[in-house]
Length: 88
Image (cartoon, rainbow, N blue to C red; front, side, top):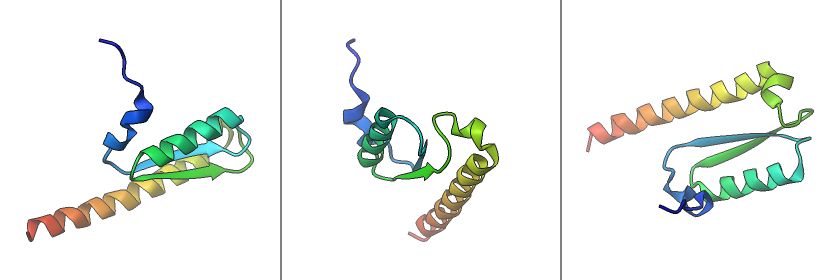
């Protein structure tokens, strides 16, 4: 089978998605992250200041805080949705 380009299938992703880039990363990475953000309906993009491509190594505590906050916020939202669905 010939591989299908992923960019045209991003809208199939139905879960909340966090995209984190470093402000000092190269323009190509910024452009790709922007295209991914636009393609995934529930995507959220954050740009970390003062880091490049290895942001999770350059500022691990800030990276972890952003990721954990996103996961916790979406766990709460998912739990609310489950409760609402039970009432249907």
